[in-house]
Image 1 (cartoon, rainbow, N blue to C red):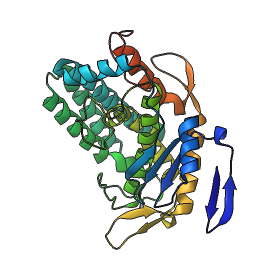
Image 2 (cartoon, rainbow, N blue to C red):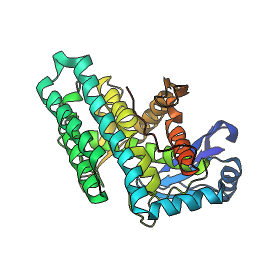
Image 3 (cartoon, one colour):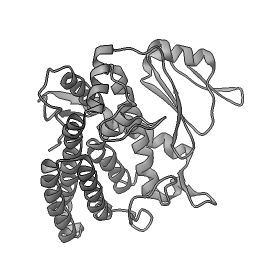
Image 4 (cartoon, rainbow, N blue to C red):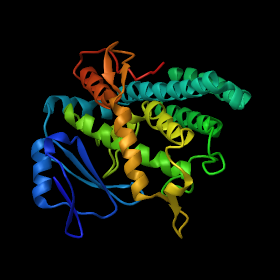
Length: 320
């Protein structure tokens, strides 16, 4: 792969060294590069300057057609959809609560511990409600309320550069402040990795269980990443800010009010993201050591095993 800027060569790398290529803004790619990526299984996607997904290049559909047919049947079965979606929500709420509890444990003297403890208690109640939910609208309501509780305490976990990264709630399309811009960017990266993982195990990323079908939306990728976001994306954003790996100078505001990350800072964040993915953890369900970057793939694989009948249920990712 060769990168040129105004006909000047800037970068060259063998394609086998690449996991994926993500283009922001309106850079182009030659048909020859698209073909090479499709042949070698290198994911190539295009996003606008805000990180909104535009398109991707992929080769022939692979995987077991019987597995995908089972996925479609389960997605149309109200009971199965609820069972699977309940585990997504349980994973998301539990991991959100663990993130708050870790902040309490590690930084109790620097945070409003009463606010964090109250939020953690409310999330524990929401977790019980999610486990007992009996229909989808009820489950979605519990998930939405839990997200509001979690993000209401999120600002307490920002320990450095507080004035420039104040968080007053989640906003997007476009993000209106520095922290929301950073979160949105990391969520795009996680969605991209999760979608690639889903495709690699032979599932259809567009057919989800909790997120309803919508043209152009990767519903299953959005489902699976819900439980991973607090551990991987949210903690990554807090680390980048608290360790001053990003600064307010790395962002700029457009006339429309939307906040964007500058190109050079985006490269640094991507580098930190890739480095984080190389760290290893013991997977809580498999009890095996894996790189953090393989969590989306592992969860997609567990979903495929469940759909094939090898598991009695889908086990969400629950970090300790």
